[in-house]
View 1 (cartoon, rainbow, N blue to C red):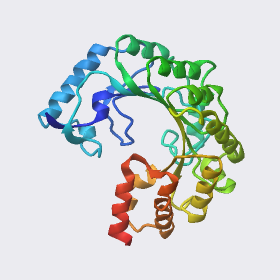
View 2: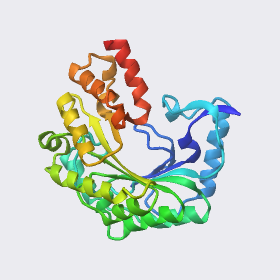
View 3: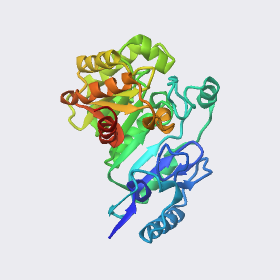
View 4: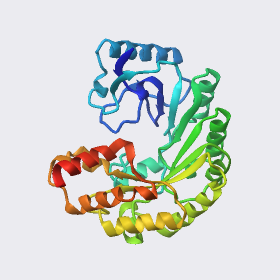
Length: 327
């Protein structure tokens, strides 16, 4: 039957440092599974129970409050099969990058970053093995490695996560700053179903330093080129380079052009564009928009032949916004 729901409620699991959620929405309120979690095996019977309750409520028009404003909560025919199509591993928080738009550190707050970089966490392996043994990992599951910097995980952990994804026939998505070259990532790109996504957010070293609060521009591009080379003979893997547009920081057509040119020069075949979350969250789309942002978005829209696309279905929203306000 048709009913309002979403893929995350039905088939997602997000493993965070101190809690576990059904989704990784950036809204203040998210649909929670375990609000206080510090490791150990999961109560899967409890998960099944609350999942069944949410599905029943949705069918009866009683929607979870955190989902009420979510654009991904829609009415359609849903597959209710029990199991996970996406598992996000985000239990670690250490990251040498310090993006000024980072949600976890509150926009690159130095003290928050220090705390995150020294924060202890639990071993995620027992949970993943439990899910595998319980047949909860569905075939072709997306296995997202985010939260902190995966190339800075303790020795052997990223290698295990790559192996686990291969063992469960999952598609592993690795989110990285590109600061440090990882043989585990290289091996994943060369021999498994894998995606590596690196947010560069700049075409010049000066703007890169402003966004990342670190002088790693040349190193990152060197690592990107090596990663792309490692996956060139494996059609099941890909490297995506991302540009998060931050109004009044990198919303420049000149900067955007430099970025696209650099992407093409290293052989990148997929470029993702997003708008910075904090700016969007403040409803700036309803206010006067800087012309520089309009021009930058229009430039990226003109680069579809170079496989430039907008993240999270935002392209249609941007196009509608441009037509309503500036065309």
